[in-house]
Amino acid sequence: MTLTIPALRARGARRRRPHRPLGLVLAAAFLSLVVLTAVLAPVLAPHSPEATDLLNSLAPPGTEGHWLGTDSTGRDVLSRLMHGARLSLLAPLGVVLLSGVLGTAVGLLAARAGGWVDAVLTRAMDIVFAFPSLLLAMLVVAVFGPGLAAPVCALAVAYTPFLGRVVRSMALQEGARPYMEGYRVMGFGEWWVTLRHLLPNVAPVILAQGTLSFGYALVDLASLSYLGLGVRPPEADWGSMISQAQSAILQGRPWSGLIPGIAVLLTVVSVNVLGEHLSGSIARRQGETR
Image 1 (cartoon, rainbow, N blue to C red):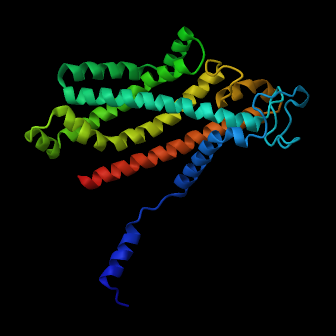
Image 2: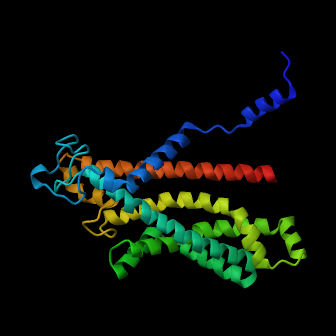
Image 3: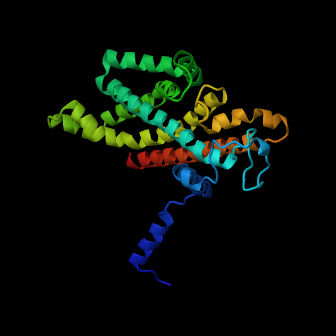
């Protein structure tokens, strides 16, 4: 059978169409479900997350309308999981946004200024990078007290080198390309070219790195809440739910701590899968353009 040229082109296009792996589809679907649940928590939650019922404490899943059981004070685990998703997602998002702005600014300034400015900023990023992010957050909480504001700001500073070093490297590579030199020859200002043309080319890398940092921030903030250094009662996030379930786990009733732990695990894995896919896609596109 003879195929016409349009048919051959259509077949080639179908073959070149990127195949989305099942893991990526599942990760995106799970993250969409978590975000939707967090947004609609006041509507979807079957009970108040703070309503206690000591006569019905540590009830197993499915008992009297408690689909995921209750904790040691009789609070509905599903309702607290839904409402806790808000802080568990918003706080890492705040870390990513703050560190993204700081990292992008520091990386671009180091790459475009060069000289002693580049040397000082690079050494500063190396020092911050060598300091454990969780330890820095604990020190800040020790000074300013528990809550989310202090840990978010501390982790944003700690995560700045992760993005700043990547942005600096990419900015140096882009700055050496012919189109950048062409804009300079035409008389455009250095920072106008940087913000108008260089930054959009670096933006996909910033997005991919920010996605990976979100998972790390979620784990760090959950760890702080587990240690009692995060959200303050009666507010709930997944880390504090795990902490409050320790006694129940020792009593052989682990669901009030196991369920939020699984939520943290699946969310982090899903975010990392998405971040790795973005990083791979960016690397392939950069390879095709060279």
